[in-house]
Image 1: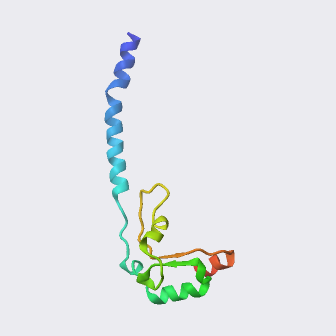
Image 2: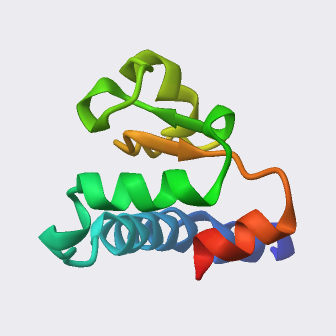
Image 3: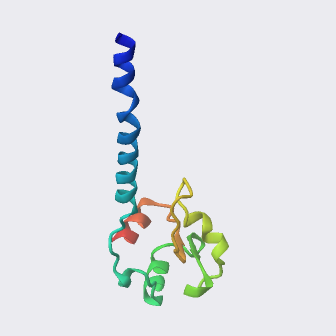
Length: 106
């Protein structure tokens, strides 16, 4: 009798609850905030200013923004560690000192 009560308690509701949670989680993670178009374009003025802040050998830029690298070289910088999200950056800065980081973020 006790085994029958346990079977009823755990058998039916669990799959429905899990299915509802996963659907709700899917909806929550599918939502993306609206993004401003002004942050999508890297202007030549931006690139020149950033090149002034760090040594030339620490700048990796595609030909589209005045560099010598191709898009394949920046692929590793445009993917997250799980390869779930991809970016489209055309410029990578690799500062060597905390002072350079501070100047970039200023």
